[in-house]
Image (cartoon, rainbow, N blue to C red; front, side, top):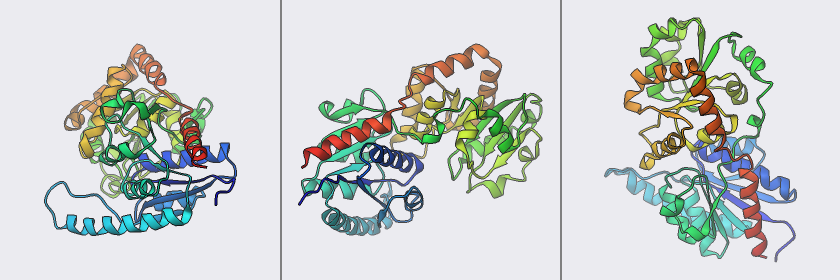
Length: 371
């Protein structure tokens, strides 16, 4: 028996690019429906199992992981886990009785949305990338609505189901105008110098770190430039004592606890080309040198970066060329005021500040139709 309270399951995760947009959607739902009941379903051992409870939402975990692309005995184990996850997802959906189920991509979203569809519950898919992930492509036929961040996504999804909303981003990067001084103080950087922000995600990016170590001599010559270098949890022990990290104009960190302050102080950004990162760069209007990771499904980061390059909104450097090209490209932007201004202006045109609320409205429409 239905009540006046709308109930929503949000499923997916694995990386920050899935988890943080999912939380942003939940927060937006709470704003428009304060009495809403939201349950997350994620993959055991993944980032969502830590971040979602910290954001104040309950979460259930499925024991599931991705299949190996080459022949491996692990695929047999993963197949066993998939069957178990489908069964567990069925009972999670059955007991919670959601009005709508939202998938944000990642391992857990497949079983959850499949079981919701089989029980006649409306399904909404949110695709962050310009090249759709395999899970979302498989779920497209079963979804009532597909919210995307890029145009021309009808090559992956039925056109009549598409809604361009953009990607939800964290709430704390909306207005950074007055935070630069606080950012410099927080990270121990100098006022009056141009600042490069380099980051590779919470775990770090090997290629970016190698390039930083390789360019120690050149970085040391940059008297009017400083670099905030996020090496990542996987790499900090290896790089914290290297020559580059000891330079007076370099600050190395395992992770950045205040991304709002990091963005505020940056004059140019060097980073990977994940969908969430690109959406954040668009919101804060920062010129960027994008080095797409080659180690992601369907090489979707290269597609993301190309979309910005085609809009004259960013510079792309191939992962294989980063050691030699990454730093010179960033310095060129710093020295070229016209180019820097153009990149800022163009990337801002791609921002979708209301993405989370637009997706939340679509979720509510589907939920109310199910009554």
